[in-house]
Image 1 (cartoon, helix red, strand yellow):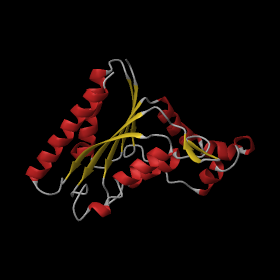
Image 2 (cartoon, helix red, strand yellow):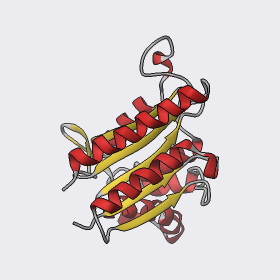
Image 3 (cartoon, helix red, strand yellow):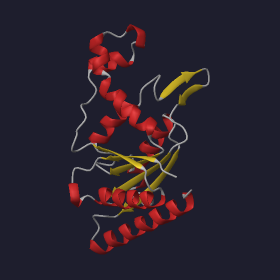
Length: 208
């Protein structure tokens, strides 16, 4: 069955990026499974997003019927990014670890799409995510090993992504992980092989 697939790329390394290569392999696999699918490509390096400024934030917290034209124009980019998420059945995010967290380009994307009244809302039971029923794959690449051992407490990359994506309703998050990429060629080769095996495992398990 055709799907709409949103690919979000954040690595600045271009063709040398491991997260981009893993994302490309995953996209290829998904398109094989779902012929005639629509692919939306959001490259945060080729098209950098501005960080939130006072005008955008004021628009976020002004009721829609009270926004002036300047605020409406300032929110157009955020609305475009949110609409891409709404359209998508499957979301593939390339997320290398930068300084124990995510690239600033990906954080800017999150700041634009995590928007009250659009992707989450507050009720008497607390916050409720509104982007439900979507499958998320994160191509996670890291120079060291953070799933276990002495560096585990320094992982603010995958833990943050799982939390913030879940906050807006994206709870079906699958990490395709290649870690130890800076620990020598042999370790990096094994890490990529493991990540590609995860791609096969996840997509075989979830194929419909």
